[in-house]
Image (cartoon, rainbow, N blue to C red; front, side):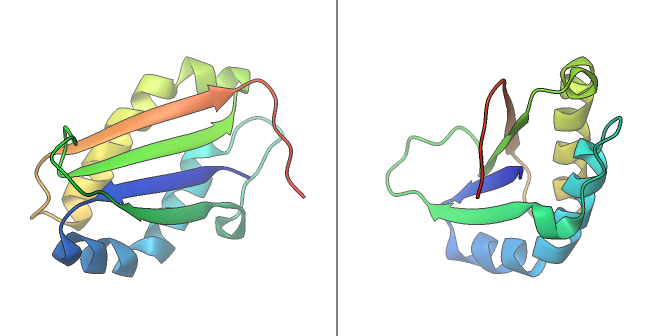
Length: 110
């Protein structure tokens, strides 16, 4: 089950991003589908985390966590660059988007 943690500081960005959740789930299910693994939007967890202070390097930061399948590893840069473009297209007022794709070897969900 891939997770997408969305870090933000401005409440206005939260409202815009929250409205985008159904599209985000569809988008990341498609982008993270590979080989024999076909993801559905219901398998993508999107969580919002409000940041206090001035330590963020983007207006919005996304941390995507998923299993390290070979096809994902091969396409990891494209996944991140395409995701930045997706967020900027859907919410043009958000100019500075940073994305990290963390691919792990082991994982377990219940």
